Image 1: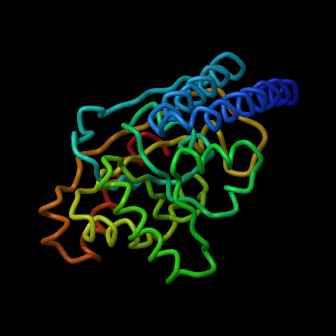
Image 2: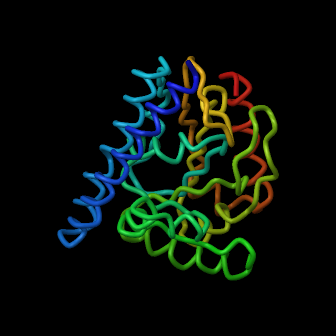
Length: 238
């Protein structure tokens, strides 16, 4: 049964990705907001397929914690799910992601059209410069910036070492930081074609204000983000 589910999910998901990405790219000439409105539907389709094929339900908590002003968003990274679903949770934003993803046909091209910020992991100094310059520009233009501080997907219950790039960007752009926790890896495990019935909970946590980001030491801000996310993950079973 799990093979049939995987076949159905990835067949329809790939078809939807190619179709929606194509439209995202074509309508980019009308502005990034138009492209974003189209790309938003990809998140909805993905979660619809998860529900219909696997019986996976989505629970979003804490939307009231999302600030009105742009900020830096930090989230734990367990699965592909959070990358694809954050657009239905947050206002328009730019992802910080590895450059290799931009080369994926249709998917990567659409990310480029939506203003994603690619970085080269093998060049940490250059990556940080890209994050600071392009991330600040995105924030100044009114968009949020999403960073996964662990850098790569981690198994459930095994958080990675948090990197300070998000805090450095928030300090430079003089904005707050919004932590987000989820347990997506329970239903959509890292590196697996198979998914499991259950409930994915994403919890938007209280933000760290721009004033606190500026007044606190960088390491203390990073530790606060990590503590909030790790604690919330344990609470929701992730």
